[in-house]
Length: 166
Image 1 (cartoon, rainbow, N blue to C red):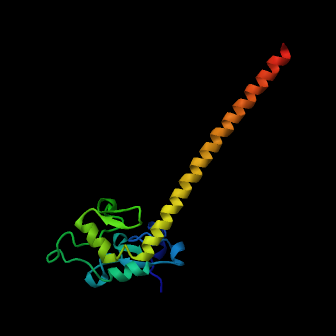
Image 2 (spheres, one colour; image 1 turned 30 degrees about the vertical axis):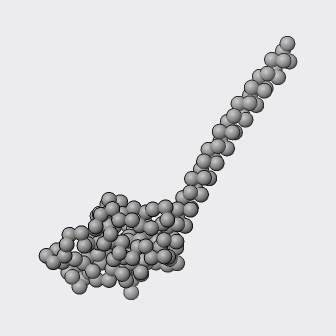
Image 3 (tube, helix red, strand yellow; image 1 turned 60 degrees about the horizontal axis):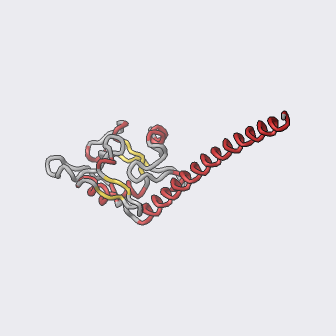
């Protein structure tokens, strides 16, 4: 049975895994709801505790939640909406996530965010972005050429009239 807040959580996360970014379209179906703080550790169904997650990220996260009394502060997962993930990790040109902080490194390792399938996915997304940028540059160039062509037509027409008026 689907979680009662499934549709709300799907929309909040833009139909993408909050941990790895894979979309429903890329995974071929709806993702799952993860309790950031597991129910087994007193987690609830509050909006901040529900994360839209792909099956693999949900599986790798499992029921992990650090005990603040026994776990080092950096050994925690980043909350996709409450933490600024960009402060902890970045994506390199090879599609790999690189850690900027110990927390980022723990997050990458715990969720196995550099698994081959995700790296290929990120490389595909990088290629799509480069292609979109190329098309936009091409469109701008064509617009500039069209403006120049129109100006040339106007200039040509004025010159033709000037010659006829002589």
